[in-house]
Image (tube, rainbow, N blue to C red):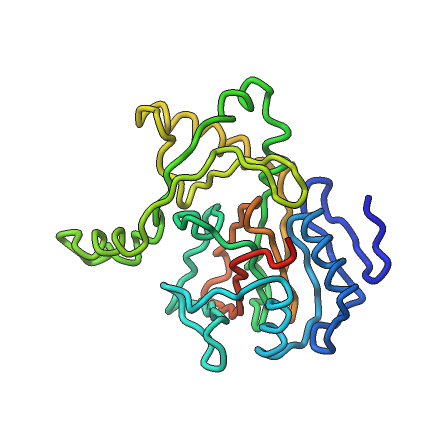
Amino acid sequence: MRNYRHIQLEPLTPAIGAEVSGVDLAAGMSDDVLDEIYSALIDHHVIFMKGQAITVGDHLKFAESFGDPEPPHPIYPYHPECKQVVVLHTGPHNPPDTDGWHTDVTFRKTPPFASILWAKQIPSIGGDTLWTSLVSAYESLPQGIQSEIEELSAVHDMGDFRNDFAVGESDGERVTEAHQRFGSAIHPLVQTHPVSGKKFVFANEGFTQHIVGLKASDSGQLLSLLYHHINQPEHQVRFRWSQGAIAMWDNRCTWHYATADYLPNERIMHRITVMNDGRL
């Protein structure tokens, strides 16, 4: 276990997740504190900081400490004060659509490094978010399966985002245009984390479509086996949100799932995605 001198850290499960305390994003943080927050993220894949009363500017400054914020999102609306802040306002008139396991936008050639999500308004009950460690999942795979998938790659495309373009359509024109706009990517099925050096499975139910070189039936069976293995509680942490809480996760080696069990109540979250790891 790493020794932290400037923050307090409480691991939440053996595989993934830790709560960081003793920090105040609104007051600003020294480089030493930011270094330890980064180290905690690498060690635990997702970290949580509760009770953060921050502004949009505080959120952006914190994100910029780790890399370049993402430009305006292609699907979700952004905050009027800052285009890098995605506003996820869900409720009965805008139902949530992230209640499925995924790693963000893996249909891009270079998916983002991390996301920082802040709870502006939460329901009184429900609305938890879960994360899964793809490192833990890989390390617990039988050695034979590790060897089988080591040299394989998979095609990723816009996956579930099809729903944003297909509903109400009859000829598929908008879906075709969206495929051309977002494109596809091919990623190795097993990757090595650039900081920790640990291997992890890089496939997700939301965007991974096909394993290169396999027939559709064989690809589907292998992906199904991997998903079943990854989707075990031993690899997961579940976070109950509180007002002002922040979650920051390493998008490279995690899945996440936002439960959609709080309707007709509303939830408002602010998210900044960090495109590159500026501390590499």
